[in-house]
Length: 208
Length: 295
Image: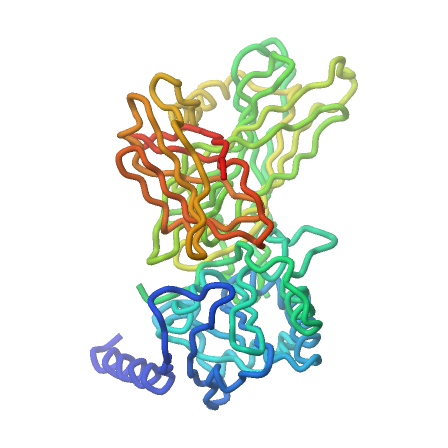
């Protein structure tokens, strides 16, 4: 690669970072805790729209950390588990925000347009897919894996933090879907049976 | 989607092996690691074995003369790749082995060497680079039928990571009735590289638990363990086994002067913690403990 080419790429990368730079509002050093107000963020979606988490106050919100280069994420989309869960939740009035915190220098990083194609092919049914290239929103929530799931109640408090289900290896015939259970409990106004589990998958590809 | 070509190589067993049954043996075992890479869209498609994260999986028979057969699942990794421990940590997946055994044979628990701690920012994982030998005891039936094909097959489901992650499955086989004496040297050599890396039980004169309790304060739960004994002050880390109904804050594990602090978060308000298991690390060696906890 020539120096000019390198310079051009660096400028392009810097421009992308600036365009996609999320404004994380109120990000706290301590990560989100179940029962406490969730950190707020404002991020651009792959469609170029701004989404502020606190604007969804009054609705149940599911946050899904994702990376299409992770084989566990691929499995959940390709076997239909994640799209079916998204369809089920959004059909009940739940807001579903899928967030990509992969840093732009990582091989798994995809541009918004590339993500649009991938998740469209996977029949994703989220409300929006948000870019968190600097990882501030991910770190504020303590997102560690892809997928890593969070469910917020209508007051913006964190109600569930953990895995999508109890099947890390993808080998079970029947699974306990923790996200569905949490969402359904919130809709019914019932206590959530399991509010914290260990998430599984690839590590979130934050910038070092 | 592109899928790496399968390359299955196996060695036919020789009857000569029976005569040397009480010795340690290595049995051939090459796998089909190509089938392995369930190369899903977006994952790297490895065109050659050299590019694959898991370069080789083989079964070592360490003693074929006793009712219990110690088997080693030897995994060689490509440069920079790592495979996870039974507790992968904050991310990753533990390897999973599915055994196919002759009738009446029973596989025991997997035994891993002490892993490396891999820290990337706030994310803590445990795993192995280079190679790993996972042990398992296979119990023979009281009177195995001579006509039974003594073929043991292990299908290893794995996630390997470096900058990115890949999942796959590799299969290795060994025929107990056809072990080659020429394999002994290699088997011995592989085992010798790992024999000091398996966790030991601590001698009570060297390491014991003086107190272990769960402390709940201002919404934060921590396990506090006071160690005693000649080696208590030398404990530098703790690699926990996974806990049912609790998530361990691995980044928050701290030890100083024989006092071990393990922050945990319960799955729900009724979760109860009766014991904590894992490896106490002293000078790079793992000492396996299971510690009852009082509330």
